[in-house]
Amino acid sequence: MKRLLFICMALWLSAAVQAAEMGDDGLHKAAWMRETFKDLSEDLEEANSEGKRLAVIIEQQNCMYCKKMHETVFSDLDIFSYLMDNFFVVQINMFGNVEVTDFNGEALEERDMISKWGIMFTPTMMFFPEDVGDEQSANQVMVASMPGAFDKETTRNLLTWVIDKEYILPGASFQKYNAELYNARQAAKSD
Image (cartoon, rainbow, N blue to C red; front, side, top):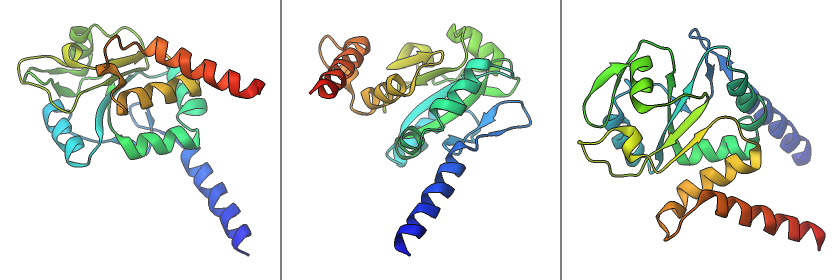
């Protein structure tokens, strides 16, 4: 009976994880995303109060790479759970007109802020440190960004790299970190 209950719960959770709905704005809405006033300083403060890292995900309507990420990567139970547990994610529409307030206090519509930040691809995820001054813009203080669609392994490795603050180590390189993890898994498979 316990096993049946466990299987039912696992199936229900798996179905819930994979069900990123489409919002009225034509963007995917995942449970790990936060609806905020898009004031990055306030969002950072709230993320910190929850013991999470602030991230911004930039998407657009009819983006095949956004769709791929939501359907094949973000829907993975491990990645979904990791995002829920560790990140405070704010979604920005690349061509939207909702006001976004940058860390430096500048307020622009989403599309203008994206242009200011120099973002050209969707999806793009930007990750921020816990402390940000009020003189710099998001693109100046981010500790990492993930432009485009990546596989589950690379996405998970980047999320871990940010949470573990690997970026502050001397000579830090995500590509090197990712390659080392990949090589270690390959070596473990051949044993």
